[in-house]
Length: 345
Ligand SMILES: NC(=O)C1=CN([C@@H]2O[C@H](COP(=O)(O)OP(=O)(O)OC[C@H]3O[C@@H](n4cnc5c(N)ncnc54)[C@H](OP(=O)(O)O)[C@@H]3O)[C@@H](O)[C@H]2O)C=CC1
Ligand SMILES: CC(=O)N[C@@H](CCC(=O)OP(=O)(O)O)C(=O)O
Image 1 (cartoon, rainbow, N blue to C red):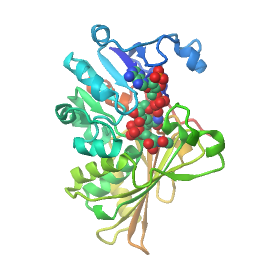
Image 2 (image 1 turned 90 degrees about the vertical axis):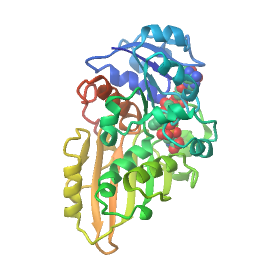
Image 3 (image 1 turned 120 degrees about the vertical axis):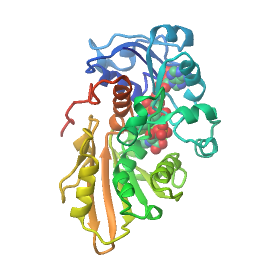
Image 4 (image 1 turned 45 degrees about the vertical axis):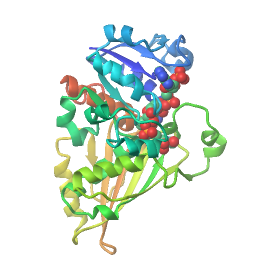
């Protein structure tokens, strides 16, 4: 299969390039960017020396359509809503890592992304690519809206509890932390070493674009349209997301009972690791891998379930999950190209 990456020079794009080096069935045929087109990827990422020798090209829809079977998009919000429809119409499978097709209601996109939304028909056609939740729909998808990094960690942590109705959806509070690569490679004062190092800060408080995405899926699972509290923090590390979720239990329960629900729910999911009771995951333990590690704790004093979920934002939170979805669409083994062990320490 001939694959291309649009936005290949950003952090998610170059992570796609890295992961595809180990993919047994994929030929990376073309890479594309915008302002850096014409450059060899090695000028921007020397760590790929002697591994990849490709020049970034400007997107040309007709040329791409004649050479590529599947496109992975790693572009900023607002780009794919205009680009993707032409490729879908030409029969090319599109997997979009950006947020353009995630929210079914275009008004939500306008409100939270402050941009014009994609056309309704494409929003309807897009399948939300949270693999473990939507595997059956993903199989037949032509357009995947890959989830955001925070929604991936958070929703994988919440889904079994919501499906088994052990928590009140209206009681969900999420405290989330991310490494700086989540913001992409563009220079930005807020992400400078001097601003981030030895520091931790809350950002986009009450305004984060992942709020409606998380609420949309909670609604789909529970039938309840409820607002959530969701606060993101920037911490001084390159990669990693930790989502700590607090929710009220519907009935008295124990950590053991909840643990068994989660083990059963995820027993066929190769990238979800439910940690033994009493062991809590760190971001380093999933670094560079497609794993999502989840721990459960019932605080019997407050009757709350506390869920701790970690991922690597660039792998399970973006490029790894995109490849997992591609594997499912094409019918390859779901783990193809994604079997690397986390890098530790
Ligand atoms: N970083 C992360 O952890 C995650 C990111 N995402 C999403 O993935 C997308 C990419 O993020 P990230 O890699 O961090 O961002 P980056 O800013 O690092 O990279 C995006 C790249 O897209 C390129 N680009 C912009 N417009 C076009 C265009 N019209 N055609 C081709 N290329 C274009 C830019 O290239 P040029 O410089 O040449 O203009 C830029 O380098 C975003 O939508 C982001 O929200 C989702 C989950 C996690
Ligand atoms: C550190 C940092 O800034 N992280 C980004 C993650 C963005 C992301 O995952 O992308 P989408 O906008 O495509 O959902 C943020 O919090 O907005």
